[in-house]
Length: 246
Image (cartoon, rainbow, N blue to C red; front, side, top):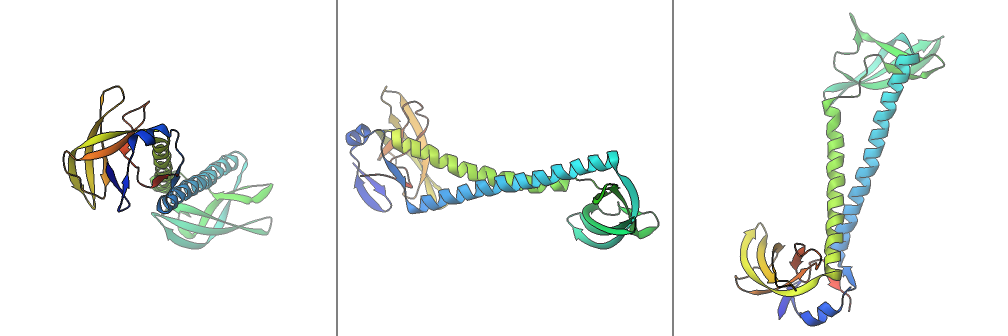
């Protein structure tokens, strides 16, 4: 039987392949790059999520401390810049004739003193005025959720790439190879979705599908690899991106 791999033909000796379990498999260069990129996305997403979460937790903790132990003072607004639906406010205030400064993202028109657009009410710690926040500061906003959702999406995508690679590697290492038959083939963008079925060791019928570059005719033979413990995990053999060490 002949199967295609990377544009070349290779003989698949099913009896020989099934006696080499567990097999030694390795990634090709493109799959290794994809796996590395997935790992990078996962680590980046986790690191940024932890960093943003720590910033939010620190801000909320600071607010609790200031509400409990802080004092208020009127400060001067030094600079305002537009950020998302709010404004990034830089301010300065004086305590015991010592000048302190701070900055915070605020909701628009929710921080100025009534009748004075250049003044802002600040809460600070008496023993350390460097710890300060505008009285009306609030972190919780629907717009602040979007960066977290984006990071979760990046992290989930990276995790999916890694999990898929590990699952396919396990399938190549310990899977059982059987001769299957193509039951359907449909175009899918630049690929083809190939549907197939084959008989497991116990005689039950296994059905599956995979996306391939090559178009297969209905009724054509196709090598299929599946897990003995879970035949629903199956794919065309050999699995793209993996090779068996000689």
